[in-house]
Length: 227
Length: 317
Ligand SMILES: C[S@@+](CC[C@H](N)C(=O)[O-])C[C@H]1O[C@@H](n2cnc3c(N)ncnc32)[C@H](O)[C@@H]1O
Image 1 (cartoon, rainbow over the protein chains, first blue to last red):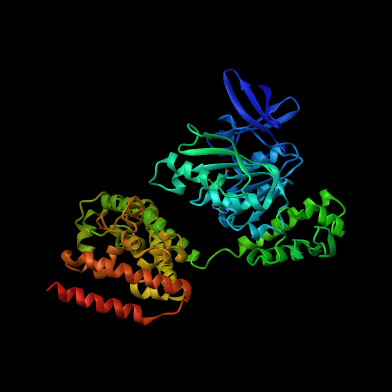
Image 2: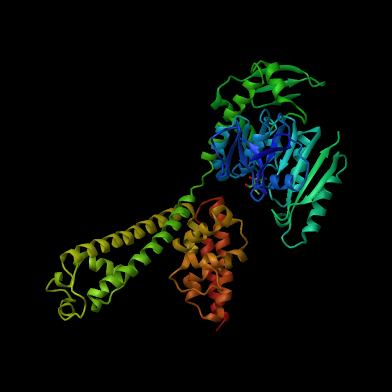
């Protein structure tokens, strides 16, 4: 397979006509959720399926990646750690603060944290950022995938407390979680409005993109904190 | 300003510099508990932009970043484990028991059907089903093994069924014994559910009965979530695909929720079933709320339902 750099620490593997998104395994030999491991020369890569990860879909739909090798990341809605594990691969020298409020779900993520030194698990409610403000440092990137009705305001309160000036918020908006009867486009508009039209929120839309065909009725959004 | 971080209480000057800092000792378990206390009731929250890493180093809590992150990870994992351990609510035992009951039913139905066909080949005149048949075969074995005084003795002598020998008999008897113990297990679990319902949800137990009450808790995913459901939801709960799994083998119209299994509704004239269902659902909703919040039996709930039922019956005459 042929390896190409897609973004910093994010790769594509080419096999014949097929192209896969992948990250370099921070903990070689270990797979996290049944993903394929591929050895190319000295490195081991983990195939990253856009259907299983909103972030992978966002990248393939050409939203820019703000992640670097040393990024500090606040990840809201980490679930069992599918995507978190890839972010952990990307920010090899950085940190991922992974917030999830369901104990059951978090129980499945703990083994991943024990395997990877750069994931800090927080069993907490992302709509109460005060509750983890004694742990989380100012971060370069906030990624949010909570699928909740008030997802825009959850993002906003975390941005205000933790996002560094010049940092990025990436979020996936799931229309049906916000309002299952309204048209997705209406929901997206209203959520973006909550996010961007706050007084002094200092947020600026970089790019938005629907995540179909990987995820139906989801909008991927990249926002920058200007100062 | 005095702020709390996971590793220290810190006094910060107006300009953000550290005035005073007393770091905790590096004891993972103690730090984890400190973290959870803060999480439950955040006070003296560090201001936005506060950098705990640099402060931990300046404070002398750790020598550098590597040590900081390694310790932080250990503490957060320990805190998460503690919190997970404390997150299980006691009604989970009811949920698991109800689901185990469903699994037993499914398995027992399958085995009982097999036994019926198998033993029926040998002794079609026996004419028993499920638990009765299983017990009969487990106790008596084949036709020729029946005691003189058995009520089936005559039928056995003149049976048109297939002959079976001692080896066949041993196999089928053991099979029936397994099935019997499955039925016994079912009774034990049912009693366990009744006992737990009395303790954990006494009001639901009184209004719904233990079986229906436990099933409502199980379908809602817990007493807490049941108590948050409007009574209109409780009324139709189970009136969908999931119902079939739960009620397999029991006759219930899929238009109706699981509460239609309650005698109040089952035994009422079809004309007033709708009204009864509404009254029952509303009473169940109150019962679940009282159970979730106080856990004390309040006889007034059932009394109120009884009065309502009476007036529905009278109104329909
Ligand atoms: C769509 S899943 C996330 C999937 C994950 N990002 C991935 O790609 O692997 C949403 C998760 O957010 C969690 N969640 C929802 N609301 C939350 C909140 N307020 N705080 C923390 N987690 C939340 C849910 O429990 C669920 O596990």
